[in-house]
Amino acid sequence: MSEKLRVSGINKYYYKNGERFKVLDSISFTAGSGEVLCLLGPSGCGKSTLLRLICGLDEPEDGLVRLDGKAVSCPSPAAVMIFQEFGQLFPWRTVLDNVIYPMRVNGIGRSEAERKQTAETWLVRVGLEGFFHVFPHTLSGGMKQKAALARALALEPSLLLMDEPFGSLDALTREGLQRLLLQIREETGSTILFVTHDIQEALTLGDRILVMGKEPGRILKVLENSVKKTGKRSNQEKSALYDVIHNLLGTV
Amino acid sequence: MMRIHKSIWFVLFLSLWELLARSGRFSPLVFPPLAAVFKALFHALASGELLQETGFSILLILEGLLVGAVLALLLGMASSLSPLLRSFTEALAALAHPLPGIALLPVIILWLGTGRASILFIIIHSVLWPMLLNVMTGFRAVPKVLAETGRNFGVRGARLFLEVYVPASLPYLLAGLRIAWARAWRALISAEMIFGAVGGKGGLGWYIFKQRVFMDTAGMFSALIVIILIGILVEEVIFERVEAATIRKWGMTDQ
Image 1: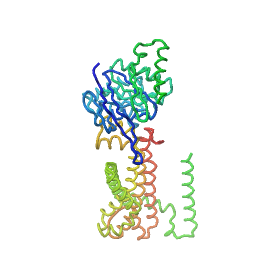
Image 2: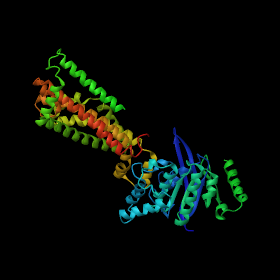
Image 3: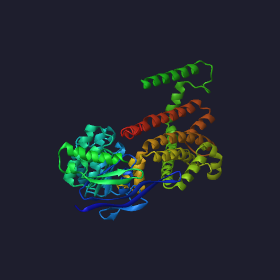
């Protein structure tokens, strides 16, 4: 597995009333090509901030983010972020046009017809056939997140950044989307950085799990997710790993 | 239901008007009967005079609205680029916004004379400031997630403004345009009356003023009817349709 992402020596501060608080403390890790890496931690541990730095939406005080060997300094479609908010689709564009627009901006596809075809293929893949020409406000939360996923995938990003994208969904819809994400990853071999505070979700999705602690935000441990790799093994093994993580987080 | 109620009231108003006019208490020079008003309206329209004056006014206000709205957008964009530009624009708006266009008339006459340019200046003044305030509020209210999604997709500079910020703040922009229209329309009619009297030409305001000079009271009221009709057309038909075809269709009205 070749290296896709290298995060080295990140420090990030946050200023309030002239005081300086450390949000992220010397964060370093790598992600291999095709890997699903889960960033797991309690709220306030800076995991979303870390994802924003990797996207280039914010800048760290120290340290460097390298994607495909190139330093990230500003947001680009090489690393596409999917947010938790359902409002990330452009409300004035139809679902189909939401997918086509960023492709057009970035000159992906040789013609408008080709872009349309690619966009339709992705929308069908996430299960939104029949919803091409509706406006986002008519979709349910789960469908909106599916559309955002299709929009991101159509850009063929080098890295997919997901900031608790299923966090506001009901449990059943969330499971459906987790399955969909894993299937799509199998087909595309996408590299995914997935932020969550849900241990179960991290165990379902992550090849590796990066457990984070807070005040300041730091990496407590990087765990190989043996549960996912070995498929549906015993519940015992699953709950053992669950306990390991739970204890790690409990000590924070 | 509301519409039915409204039209019943309209009929009542008109009936009351006709009753008073026919009571014989008022001279038709002061209080003309409806028949005379509609006859005057018909004649003025048929002769093309009223249509010409209306066209003159409409053209002026469209020009002013366009220039004012574009200026407001440009200033709004500039002010979201740096805190310095923002404070500059805010100071400018704070000074100019409370000034009714008509209060500026003497100064404008002194600077620009009494021609078309002066009326245009007043319209732009009435459009620019309320529009600018709404543009600035609207840009600030653009959901962070939309702006960041745009940036993430590599949308930059003027394109980010036109393709993300402008549509995302459209509810504010349309509200601003409604206020701007209402102010500009009032300012226009007043300015035309005054400039017409000084020797300029044209416009509905000037038409009303002229009919008063000729003691053509019915003619005066016929122009007032045209003003009311245009007001209803723009506010209840045009703005309604634009909103239905955009922000309501996109589900952006209940933010």
